[in-house]
Image (tube, rainbow, N blue to C red):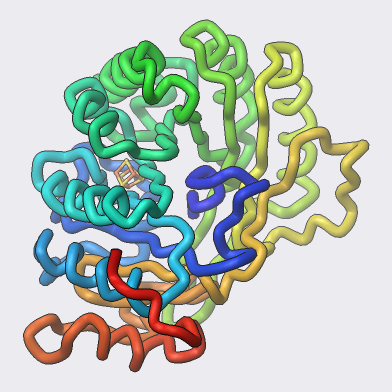
Amino acid sequence: MAFGPAWDASSDPTTVGVAATFVVPATECDLACPVCVIKQRGEAKSPVLTAADYGHFLQAAFAVLPVMRVCIQGYEPLLPESWDCTKALLGASRISAVPTSVITNGTHLSDRVVELEALDVGKLTVSLDSSDLVTNDRRRGRKGAFQKTVSGIERAVKSRVLANRVAVASILYPHGVEALIGMPEFLASVGIRRWSLSPLIRIGHDGSQGGFVESADRVKAAVEVLAREAGRYDLEFFVDDEFKVLDASSWTPEETRPSRRAIARAERLLRLDPQGGLSVGRDLLAESRFARARWIPGDESPTEFIQRAVPELIAPEPLGIA
Ligand code: SF4
């Protein structure tokens, strides 16, 4: 689900507060990954929220919730159609000194580096699914995706502000080791030091929760191979299992070198989608229509909505708007 890449395991915001994550309202991505979680969840079908709504929501969240990190992802936050919303969220976070993360497909990254520096984005995760151009583009559903994404990565790595904040995330498909085996060498060659792996997720339908497509044993076998390869190039390497849905009881740190990254308290992870749906924790493994609550900006202030939707997360004392 790609939240793990949005922060380091050592600074998981849900251990002490709330992580506020956002899907910003592009009606269509410029790539067409057949496994897209945003598409599977139906989050961006009929966007109703504007950039101003996102800004108002976040200011209200800062005032009443202990927000420790803001994370922006998909459809694609750097697209022209999404960029005003992304800027509104990053700008409000910067003013309130709340750390931020952006997860991007990287195709517009080259053009946004200067603005992302100015907005002081804290962590930038770029998704790339193979070091092989043809394989990557097939998985991302568009020819030319690889070259645009890699140009973006190279540009970000040259930025004095962003160089140490950039990481790459890849999806591990079933039987997908071959497509990823060349990634560590490739990433090292372009100056990337952190790589994370997200086993493929299937979103649940009709209210049922989804989960990983592969069994824990098969994921483990793939991870062992890829971890060894990452070690050869001295990369930091993580496997993302945000909601602890992987039965990893048979894994040991000795056997499986990378850290398995999970969210400490999933019930403190919020996600606002462009239809105003607010999903909480493991709700995110099901379609957006099963969201905890839905915000209609004309009908309810953002503060009233947050108080109605997640009363259990309200901070005991007013936090004030920074
Ligand atoms: S790049 Fe991301 S948002 Fe776009 S289709 Fe692929 S998974 Fe979905």
